[in-house]
Length: 184
Image 1 (cartoon, one colour):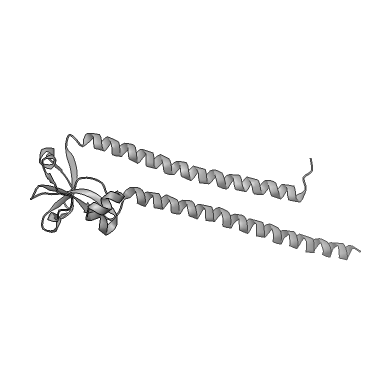
Image 2 (image 1 turned 180 degrees about the vertical axis):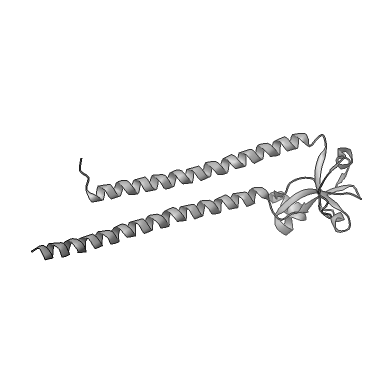
């Protein structure tokens, strides 16, 4: 079976496209598996939260500390409290994106659009404070960036490859013309 040059080129192009598509699918599967593992870990952590609460100190850099759950559970919930300005605070939950309702009703959402449940130790008050980064969103942005860069790599590589093929074809045609003109 003899293939013409254009048929061989088309076959190579399809192979290149198939490899690129499979790599993009592989990146997406990797992203979803990482997200699934993180969510399952978070669910297990919330199940274990009833026994004792592990919190991070915000005011000091002493590291995580375990406190008694009864004091946190009995704490008064004041969503828009300003106790964080005068007291030591501790984070009780992860940073999450605010819903439309929360953006209207909670002051902490106005600054960054993200909130987390926080606890004032001295006054025994729980409130929603503003926070900067959501780990899920940062990881999602990272993988989106990686995917875009990978797609750009495939597109630019294939453009270079196609252009090189065109230039080679022109070069071989010129060489063939020179050979034909010299043989006569």
